[in-house]
Amino acid sequence: MNFGEAIGSGFRNYVNFSGRAPRSEFWYWSLFVLLVSIGANIIDSALLQNELSPIGMLWGLATFLPGLAVGVRRLHDIDRSGWWLLIVLTIIGIFVLLYWDCVRGTAGANRFGPDPLGAA
Image 1 (spheres, rainbow, N blue to C red):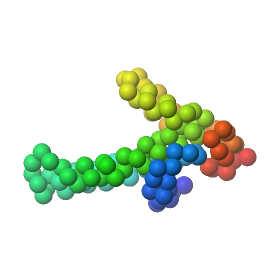
Image 2 (cartoon, rainbow, N blue to C red):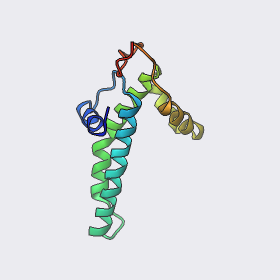
Image 3 (spheres, rainbow, N blue to C red):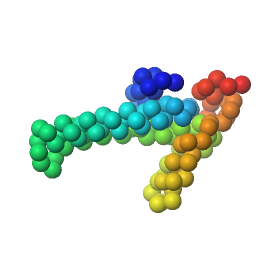
Image 4 (spheres, one colour):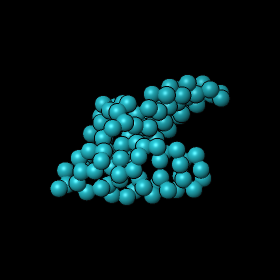
C-alpha cells in the first residue's frame, strides 16, 4: 500500500473497526496526520498569533476517529483485540503498542479477517 492508498483507506474506513490494516497503512496514515498537523499549527500561529489553534483542533477532531479505527485494525492484523489500545494509558503501554505497530501482521487469515497483503 502506498501513501495515497493509505490516506484513502483511512478516510474510506472512517469508523470501520473491523478488518485488518497492514503496517504500511498504519504508518503512512500516521505520517499524513503528523504532517498536516504541523502545517495546521504553522498556519494557526502565523494567522492568529495567540494560544488558540482552531485549524489544528478541527484537524484533530476530523482525524481522531479514523486514526482510532486504523489503530484498531492494525492490532487486528497482529491478531490482538482493539481493546489493547487502552494500554496506552500506562507509560509502558506506549512502548508495547509502538513495538506491536512495527511487527509484521499474521500471515494468512486470522480471526479478524483475511491477510490484507494477500499472503497465503
